[in-house]
Amino acid sequence: MPDRVHLLLDVNPQLGIVKIVGQIKGYTAHTIRKEFPWMKSRLPSLWTRSKFISTCGAVSLETVKQYIQEQKGK
Image (cartoon, rainbow, N blue to C red; front, side):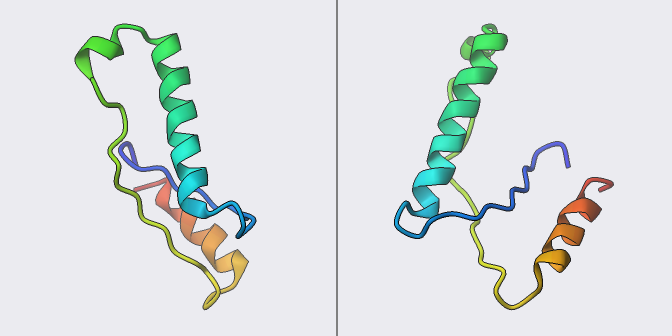
């Protein structure tokens, strides 16, 4: 999907998933703006603060991987 990113992460619970996602957003925003400086004036904020985080304990890892793969064509 052009406006979505799906990540499957295995995160140490002591670090916290919200902190890791924030770091990923910060790093990618910095990297994208470094490569495309014109975006700074057009998009003052590259990412929103929103995020959706879910655990996948109720389904198998393979099911989650398949779901993410299937999202590529939509």
